[in-house]
Image (cartoon, rainbow, N blue to C red; front, side, top):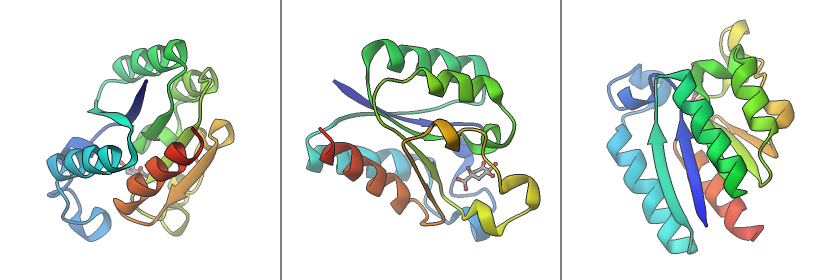
Length: 142
Ligand code: DQA
């Protein structure tokens, strides 16, 4: 069974995007880090990123059908996409929402995530380490 690590808009620009907020780890580094952690934990990890909401919805529907666990950084969709939230609500295995930055310490519009209420748990502000910790949680629940 796959464990999906799904990333929303602009996260493909990690490493050059607002490095003061998101750090210097590139998206390619993030993919490698998740795959490495997955290997160490015995998880079959697949990492994806999209800027297209309909593509994210299709991935979430597939994860629901497969009853696969998901680590999701919904990025800006966190704050306004009821469509992403509704797709997350259909998941049947753990969903860990991850934010690289501490959204609670940032602009007011970032402090609320419409996804969080349907997530198993949320990790924010621990940088890319949040992805490692999310995978460890998923591995521990199997
Ligand atoms: C983010 C926080 C969001 O507010 C922002 O839109 C992102 C990334 C994070 O990982 O800290 O794109 O989800």
